[in-house]
Length: 110
Image (cartoon, rainbow, N blue to C red):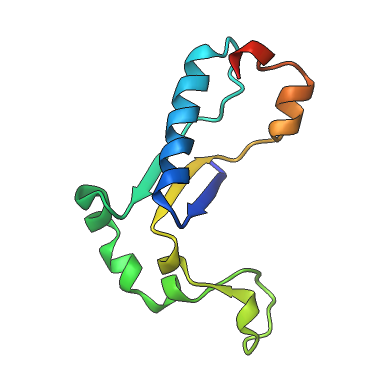
């Protein structure tokens, strides 16, 4: 299943994302809210310990943004250790604009 990772640096947006998806998922009569498959929260010891080896791996700290990049250009790399929170969801065919413009979520639900 193709997935989408959303990495976050701060706890507040991470918590807000989880809460909004949960609440909007309850209110929506359609399946327009993409479910969360997995989360990574560095503050949650049980979750964090599952990924401890990954977080210590050099590839985690220097992940290429594209497959065909210049190896010397550091702007083409991302250090995932700087993002202690993540949400994993199924890859969507649309975006928030599509959902709102097609009326898949009622205005009063927002």
